[in-house]
Amino acid sequence: MACVRVRAIGVVVLAMFLLAPPAQAELVGEFNARLKDVKRSWGAYTVVADARVYDTTGAPPPPLAAATVHFPRGAALRPRFLAARFLCNPGPLEIRPDPLLCRGAHFAAGRIVLDARPHILEPFSADVHMFLGRGSAGAVANVVVLVIPNELTPAYAFQVLEGRLLNRSPAGRRFGYSLELPTKVKPLIPGLRLHLAEVHLRIDGLALRRRGRRPLFWTRVPRCPASRKVSFGADYAFEGAAPISRRKRVSCRRFVRRPAVQREGQIPGAPG
Image 1: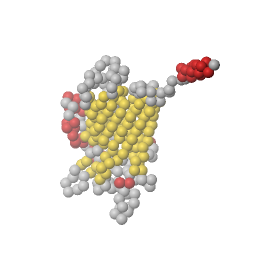
Image 2: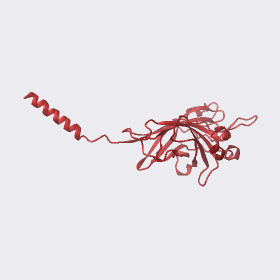
Image 3: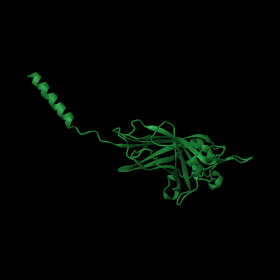
Image 4: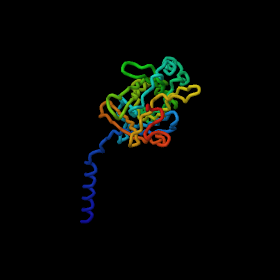
């Protein structure tokens, strides 16, 4: 009798397992930003930004239709950095992928990770270099993006893509400029789709060296509010899936000088 009960329980448990609905897929977008190498004497700093998109089931994420990184309100590009000496002509890069060809316009570098499943099982990465470019309609400046494979892969070759730097200040109080990143890396193999899964950037910016004077950093420094935090953000738009927005508040205490030296809350490089 006990044996029959055990078998019956086993059948019930097996039936519950077989009838249980599969785990629901969830699309996750992660974003992190931090400030480093702050030079209070002339308002320079480096932004380190990391973004990642994945499906909780382990399947490839849907293709990205758009990816935008938002910067704190007040971090505006200084007009003199739109002079020709700071702008990159993408033409030579399309012939020879050497970042030194646009050395004067180089403001960021990093790495992207691409997912080409099911055709290629393992993700692979590429180095990226970003340069300030001449603006198009509606943009403060364009962003020339040089993508260089750092692994031997038949999936794609080096290529030059284009993004945009936009002034979003009138649209809201939290953010100022936004960087629209290119999301489509062109494959060499017909029918292959490359999904942008991760972006890791170090944005050092540009500087104008001046004899006998402090260097001039490419953006104005936002005022550090009473909360001692400024906001960064990232928005992801997908093909066939709901968009995702992420926000990150970052300490700006290192921008603030001691009250004995400068008014509390005042940042070097910002207008008085």
